[in-house]
Image 1 (tube, each protein chain N blue to C red):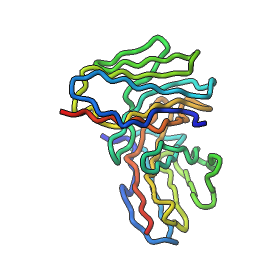
Image 2 (cartoon, chains in turn yellow, orange):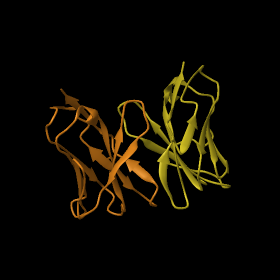
Image 3 (cartoon, each protein chain N blue to C red):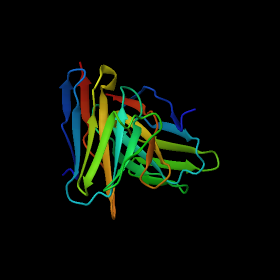
Length: 114
Length: 110
């Protein structure tokens, strides 16, 4: 079964609203979680690295005030897309790692902003 | 220049054919190398790790050439279920920080 659960699987929202995506590790403690974004026919691009209890590290070109990441516990990280616009429509995927556990991916969230 | 370069394809081959994909990476400090498979609208799944000595898993063979910074994947006796996008992946700045190639789309035709 899935060891990393990501919710929601898909969401449609109106421009200007904020959307929160959750990433949970189900049977291990995830000290590090990664957030990726994938536009159609493009590769997964790392957005940020999230360590439990500390601020996320964002990749160059990713606005930290627009993509808020919280990793308050060892099993949960959230990504909030604030004031979403149509150009934010994408496939967002998290991955989690911790201890001896290999890297696992969530099932992804397809965001459509209208 | 992209850090990981792949031919996006698409590749359309008949069932039973042998198909090979290549990938190059630009960061010589990359430590680990993988091939992932991604089905449409799904998360990527690890297909296999890649080593300099080459490794084989059933019909799949992967090879790494560190000197040329080149990675390959060979699929023998291809099945319809092999249709997917194959992602070349290297690590940067830590074993779990993955850098993905654009992916090569493969369609196996009956």
